[in-house]
Amino acid sequence: MTLQELIDKSKRMVFFGGAGVSTESGIPDFRSEDGLYRMKYSVPPEVMLSSDYFYSHTAEFYQFYRDKMLPLWAKPNAAHKKLAELEKAGKLSAVVTQNIDGLHQKAGSERVYELHGSVYRNYCIKCGRAYPVEKIASSEGVPHCTCGGLIKPDVVLYGEPLDGATVEGALDAIMKADLLVVAGTSLTVYPAAGFLDYFRGDALVLVNRGETAIDRKCDLVLRENVGEVFSGIRV
Figure (spheres, rainbow, N blue to C red):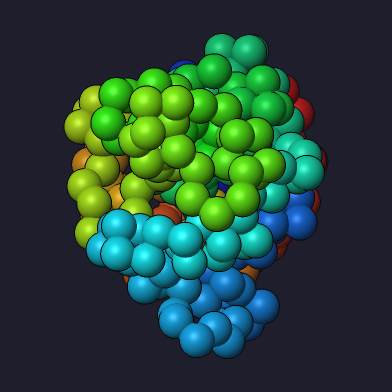
């Protein structure tokens, strides 16, 4: 069966996406040849994006975060737009994403489970006051709340647990899905990659340029760019 035929047949489709979903919007992924983790820094990006580093080297964290993690200029690509159309048409139950760029919401998707948080949400760790991303992007050094507390992005750093309510919603959507489309992810980041073990539906589809650990379990594997694949889908 083709992806179009599987989508036409489905009544409860769920999309599970990673960094490769946003590369066609100009946002680098992490582990490809041109990815963030292949770039040379005095401190590895995995360390700079950890909870320990955030609290022990906050100024250095924010310098890297502003330079590399805030692509506020990015716009939704064909995949984001088509998924929003599928949701509005009642074909897509939910988007589960590992990305923090907010592009699914920019495209119009409403049922989005952001496993690793979002750069568009920030809060004071002392009083809880919320701040927009513009506060982080336009400030210099370490941003602080009016109460004096440190402002932290609402993103899941290495060493931090996923949000419980988000996990519960994502797993519920996956368990109820009859079609699960996994796209743009190497499936090497846990616990998110383990969510696929909860799928009990009819068809599992993978859209990814490289091989993954679930290739043999899939009913359909497409070695293409995610945006190119979804641009050809009829709603």
